[in-house]
Image (cartoon, rainbow over all chains, first blue to last red; front, side, top):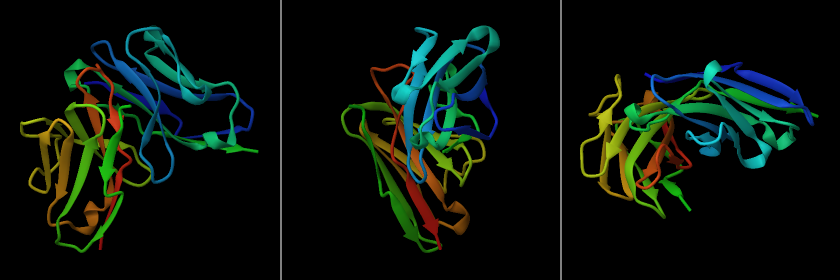
Length: 114
Length: 116
């Protein structure tokens, strides 16, 4: 069965600083990997996805993530944090055997300080 | 494109009543829809998978008689919480998989259920 682990339930960065949210996955078959952002009382917004094409994936709002098979990682980065980036971030994995149902990590709450 | 509409966004009901939540794919056909549940400050937990025209597949620990899922068409799935109790209060989110896209899901805005 596939799963993801998000290291750090809370991450705090200063405005303008680098954002790094960590995600490691396990999957017995080639995975599809996703990062979603969730604002309070709202649904999920897709930031980016890896579906076996380029390993460096660029998403919306300046976010990007790199798929590293050797490290089973899919960390999310953004060069310069904005106050509006404060939200909950979820890493998720799916594969053919799961019927493409997403299996989510526990989430990382990003706090951006002035 | 690829918009998923979920209704209602908020619902408050009395204990013992039933509540229906609708999930519609507005501009694509969804062969598969997934229902998730999210408790406050927690992650999303998959409840069930529904394929158009067939019975839903429930995850372990999810009561199929309490959470009735119907996927009557390629654009509509419904979740009915039957005989709701306060412990059913949660954020329910649906997602839909377009027929022509592999591995990608689109999410509704979620429905906040509060059972008094």
